[in-house]
Amino acid sequence: MRLAIHGLISVLLLVIGGCADSSETATLHGRADTLLERMHEAGDFSGAVIISRDGEIVYQGAFGAADRTRPFTLDTAADGASLAKTVTAALIWRLIDEGRIALNDPVQAHVAEFPYADVTIEHLLCHTSGAPDYDPFQPLPEADAATGNVALQAFMRRISPRPLRQPGATFSYCNACYDTLALLAERVAGASYEDQIGRMLGGIGAGAAFVRPARFADWPQPRTLGFRSSLPGADVFDVFDNEAIYGGSNVYFTARDLHAWAGAWIDGRVHPEAVLNTALAPARVGGDVSALNLSSWYCAPDRARCYYTGHHQAFFNLVYWDSSRRISVVFVSNNTMAPPLQPWLMRSLVAIAEGREAEPRPHVPPEEMDVDVEALAGRYLLPGIGDVQISIDEAGPTIQAGQGPRYQLYQVGYGVLYTPGADAYLSFVLGENGSPPTLIWTSVFAVAEGRRLA
Image 1: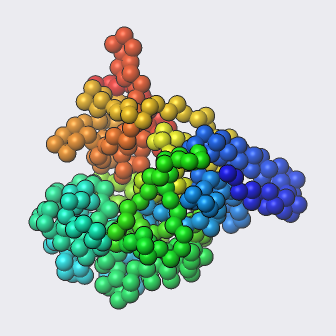
Image 2 (image 1 turned 60 degrees about the vertical axis):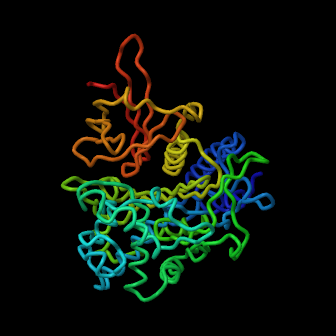
Image 3 (image 1 turned 120 degrees about the horizontal axis):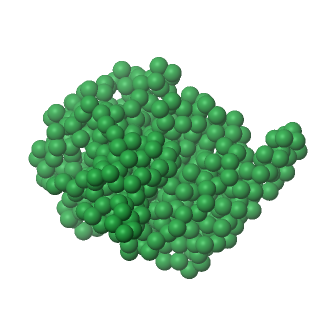
């Protein structure tokens, strides 16, 4: 199912723009439509995409179904997953700008229930608190009970009365940390998280975004479902009922909301310039520079090109913005996308926005194919990335690029390892006749490969 909404926009752009611009826009449309139509027909994409240049939408399209009866449109609200972290971080920076909190404030100064006295607001922003994340909490909630951010504090204390690691020393991706930041923002501002983000996002044109109700029965509008595929009749692969946590996730966005959010960062409307320079500074992990910054964006060294993703169950989303070229690419999607296709789609849409062709579609191995990390551990040299060390310790597989922080690695099937913190997808080509294996690193900003050295 394809929602044909781009044709009129194409015509208007062709009439208004000059010949060169019209030709370039038509080429962009053709490339984006071809890419997305083929993905949709293959069962790999349902959702909505918006590409803009200089504040003007140059492509928008919607594909597939929002549920069993409704088509997906530009106004379909989908689970934004971790994109909520960019919103939560922005709230925190607004409170910092107002002088109501500081980065080095102990979290306990504002959230008395938080169990760790030595953890600061900066530690929560940087994923360096040492606090446990969701997985250990799964057995703790009572059946059919909605778990919220206050209950989360008690769960952390029960699971680990002390931080699992020294605060500030190591990176460990932490959803619960951003839920705690949302609770902190409520305590400091004296207003609900939903009201605060409503004012902030409404002020930049993203007013349709909302915090999901804990219970499906309380949903204020038809709820977008997640599916295993974009093909008709696909199985549902949905989010969970009874979730009252928010801050690290559980904010719903339309494609138009994300387009407005990206545009606000391009135009410098989220923070004053003095705050923006600090908010976009790289986070620190011990003495190392993190790939994530203090506003929960992955940014290039120039801080002009930034992006973040959200991925939960079938939902996968992107916000990419480039303040130097004034380009943005956003999408929301509600079907399971194989990990090899995720960075490829993001890179291809950015390439199209920049006037280049989409990259060749990658090979997708079987879903059940895992990586034998123990056999492939070692040191690799990748052009543009540097020395890459894959190791296994008591916490599991880890990766370190150059002198950067050490990040955890996770099996995601399809022959891919994923590392949050670097947002890199790793795959391998086994050597023949005793030759060393090759590591392929794929992210939005880089594709590199190199053989194992040791």
